[in-house]
Image 1: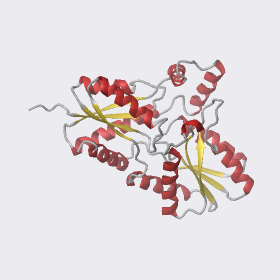
Image 2: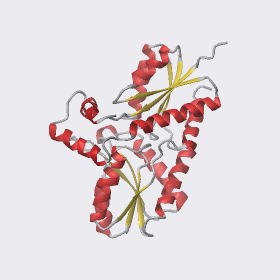
Image 3: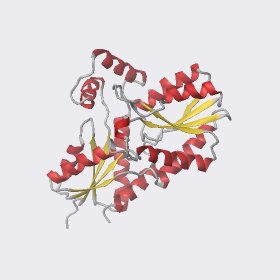
Image 4: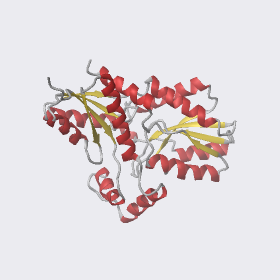
Length: 303
């Protein structure tokens, strides 16, 4: 009797440079073949230097993949082949699908390590996986979102509750996510899904002061969704409505440059200059409870 896996999971993520030498080709890929200008590249390298030289995202993404693999193995021993597919770094999404096809798998699930759906982000991942699957005779079942999974919501709630104990009584909570261009958000569920998960946490904790903010907008001429977190910090300080700010980066599932630099360094300095106490909730990373819940979600796609 064959013991070869019959089902596949493509764990999809954004990708990150693994070494300093990878930074330029990585951002060239993001910019669709246009290399960053020398000053832009120097700025990027300085940001990575500020967080220790390189982002921990690659190892954290692998930890998430491994946790999902372990959870699936415990549910359906020997049934799953779990691979990684990334948007802007190897192995690319198409590489992950090809790996499954080469192993003889004809049915797979695509899970993006992002809880909230946008056609510009998660939708693109799923389209690429589906197209690659069609080319190789592999049926893909895409999971579009998981922002209302109870394990994820409980994680956010506990993270906010715990972090608030270290901040002043008059602290406002700012739920953030990666900004997107305004043009792609017309009729897109992304803002509403972010509002839904934030509202759940706020209700569970009885938060009196909280809001939604955006961060890490692209450096392009077109308008991106705001208000930006740095603008929100300015507003909060000007109003005198709080003595502290707690940022819950609910749109990100692992520590990486946009968290460790944009929040822990850049936003923290702005808050300090404004006289505001500043904190950030812990990142999801490979939280066992959430990874197990996502494994259940994956299994449900093929049953």
